[in-house]
Length: 205
Image 1 (cartoon, rainbow, N blue to C red):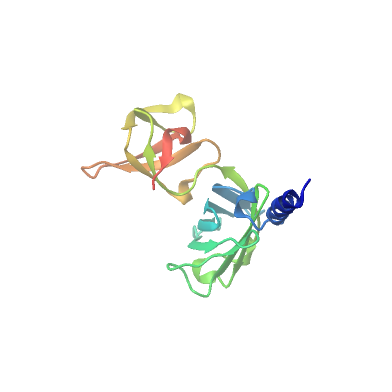
Image 2 (cartoon, helix red, strand yellow):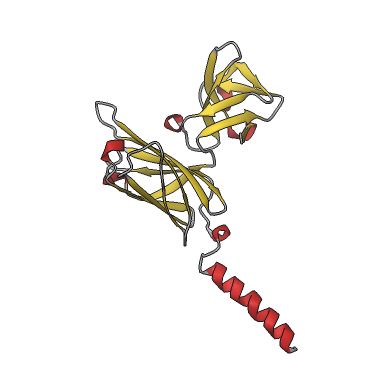
């Protein structure tokens, strides 16, 4: 092997080593989807994660499981650096610090000074992926997609959507698995909601 070949081989090897040290965003295993952490008191928290390269968008919803039906919420964006990201938000309390660390199939979240947004440190910890769905708007892909009363094939309703119809998936109505609960508003302003298969939807840009 000549000197030039050794040089090329050395450059290639260096790139591989850098990526193996997780400096390349594409090596992060945790991908788009929604992650959940359940606490022993029945409270839980969802993190809806959308990753494009090193750019992260995250929507967070927490259910306190209290008689007052207290909930928490947060929306922020940030840039991954060595698999960690400190989110920035234009909507939430500036003092609230939300950091995410992505690893194999999980997300580790840390909330600091977030009581204004009702995200106490009880929701810190490891979140496991429960669905590929993320909060936001979707369009219907097949020619016709029926609503279902429950996330079960035997509960189909008469109402349906057509290809190109736009629906909204809210994080507080998220379900684990391959079904989603969505809202559709017709051109006349009539709202219809129900479960439909996630496979019938495409994330709207």
